[in-house]
Length: 432
Image 1 (cartoon, rainbow, N blue to C red):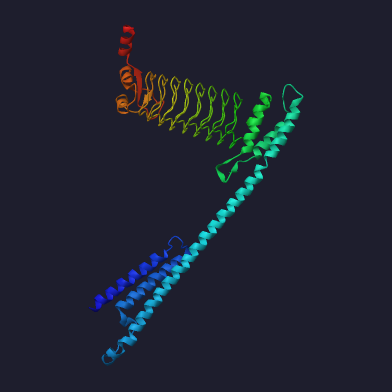
Image 2 (cartoon, rainbow, N blue to C red):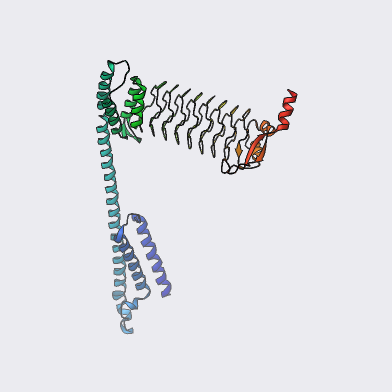
């Protein structure tokens, strides 16, 4: 009976302690260093000591003799037992309260630090926003220098000042309205580049400025730069959303991670341009020339790329869902892992291209040229039906798969190539 009573007391003690811990929200994550470890050790020791006392009272008190047992039991045993339990519970509650206060203090310090950082960022943004005055002063001096000459050739000193000022405008978190920009940008670099393209500077001098100046992070959102010469320009991570670059030249430019969402790029030239991981969703690239460019990881969803030239490009693991490519030349290109689901690929030239792991679900391939295109498995033609590709029957009739005999393979994962079915071609020719 005594053992059951002691067991019940132990269970009740554990429940009470657990309730206290839960009520105070035991801050396990708030405990740091030796303090937290020491508290845990103290708690374990105290709990063990209390349970040991409940089960083995004889280790703490000398057992009374039989004559005094009944008379002193209520005055000697019950009072110390309750006192020890209260002391243990009080110590535990006090320790939890101290740790809770420490956690709140740590959280308050973090909030203060974040607030100070935000204030510093705001001050830096305010300071750099005044750099626009420097841009205006430089452009006024440059315009005065070019006003009296028809060749529009700036001096070496003017070029050096322009390069130095452009490179000094480092991107920063820009305060716009009541919020900071998500990425570091430089409105001043955008202002400088836009002004330079409008000043009709000698092309050789302008090429020198572009080659020696970085315009990364420039803000050119919504700007009209039709027919601008931006060859060799560094526009990494630039904000060019909804920009107009009709007929512009951006050959060998650096547009990595730039934002060209919704831009108008018809008939523009991007030959040998680095556009890795750029954002071009909803853009219009109809008639654009992108020969030999690096488009790996690009996002080009729901865009228009009609009658464009993407021959010899790298377009690995890109997102081209829902884009219209009708009549575009994508021959000799590597499209490994690219998603072209729901894309309009009618009359597209894929000859000699790598279609390994390309997603073609619900795409339209009617009239596409797949001669010598590389694929990864022997069932590729049959899977066109499974992928619900429009024009699948036409392709399955027109082409057959053969093992890739090139050593080493032109594309590592491609094991088969599509060649035209000569029997079908001869039949069609005879019938015609």
